[in-house]
Image (cartoon, rainbow, N blue to C red; front, top):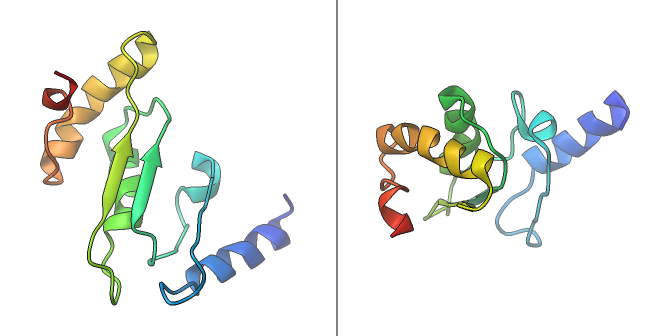
Length: 110
């Protein structure tokens, strides 16, 4: 995607409101990482083996940011004990979740 196209899409997302049509964004970390702004987002599906706490805070911040008429923020973090890198990364992310006030995901596995 060219830089101009990316900017146009980012501008459209930044101006999206909950009163608009429903919005589903499927993006990579490079697209929804630093500089991404769509404050109306309220749900995150995390399906990447990230372990860096600051990146976790950044991603979760995308949906927990206050916005008029937003009443909830939901984070779905996929876990697969049969995939070692995914299982390991969830355990490494757990302290980050706790610091942000989320329940301990390690206790939800049982």
